[in-house]
Image (cartoon, rainbow, N blue to C red; front, side, top):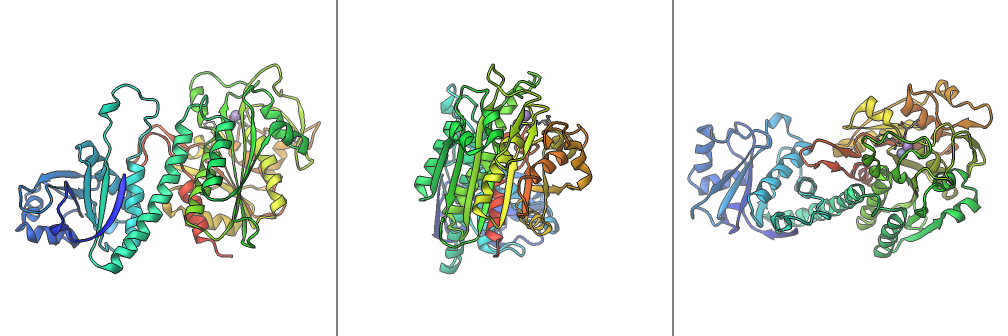
Length: 496
Ligand code: BES
Ligand code: MN
Ligand code: ZN
């Protein structure tokens, strides 16, 4: 969809469709909705007073103007109760209106951005474009039948009344677009099947991002990673015929900016390996690279927003499969940190690839490390699919994530107390890769904490929200791209 910004007012602007919003039981109508109502001799007020449109959140109505306005049609969309309004409701309402407009077969529509509640034009525009683009996302790549039935909006015109407003709207629109495109790229990677989204493809994607934004890129082969001492990552990769890659992507290298490391779990398919998973539902394990998708999306958006930070993105990417060459329960692995791990389950592979990724990130002496991973089924049991489990060694950094969570990506802290470490004690090595079933998510976090030394670090377990069964106002079913907006918000808020 093409997004343009133009000078104009709703009631004067000719378009296929004009979008208008109203709160529930508005007394009186506000902003452009009010101006249109006046021009239309109170027609919208009448519809509302008669109870034909109540303004409930997500409610939408299509009205033909029959020449009363320059626009052919109006879509009237509800915002719910004014007292409950916030940007998350706004993104949802915009998304639902966008879906309604698309499904009505409309190709072009216009919307005038005006201050609403306490929010500025720029904030509202960014959230408008974000809600719209994320809500209209569809994954149709492999749908060959009924292709012609797929509907899409081609153009949006954002109207602003003054040059100053147009400037803010342009800014908000650009940021919303950059961020949403990064989220949609992450969603495409998550929704893509594992026979397409291989470690090689992730490396290709990283290379493409590097090329487009003049970043440094390295994609190590498993043999190279092994030679460097990454005994944990290379052990996981050994069972698969599909070549693994250890990807390192660097933005703003050598500019003396604060360094932040982003480590993403890139298991492109998790069968469990020799500790194989039950076959029912195993197809979902194509999304076990959602952490990798999230950090790639974050890198792309960070570069397009020109954030003044040195970012190091690390993705250990491999399949986890059983074979005659696969690593086995009981094996002892030497990690890049030098610490040894006894493998209890080959299905706890995420922490094995990540621990080498975390150790590798220390070379850059980062101010902070964030790792994002679909790490534990236990996190889905504990928090469900609405919430990211966060754990870390630095209260200030955890607070930063909680602050950034105003994007609507909910987070909840779990503790990493020393007592939990007892579960990871091994008879033969420094630790085991699995503790008890109880506190499974925390134990995963405790394991990772042994590989960041004293560096401030937060682990984000996205096993729940990475992919969802039931759609949300601006998140269709399937891969969500969760983590991209959260990380970008955190990086935008960053103060050295
Ligand atoms: N990728 C899974 C975690 C997962 C499970 C994500 C379900 C999303 C939905 C991870 O590699 C895994 O298998 N974890 C094990 C850890 C256990 C062996 C300690 C788990 O959660 O069962
Ligand atoms: Mn696993
Ligand atoms: Zn996994």
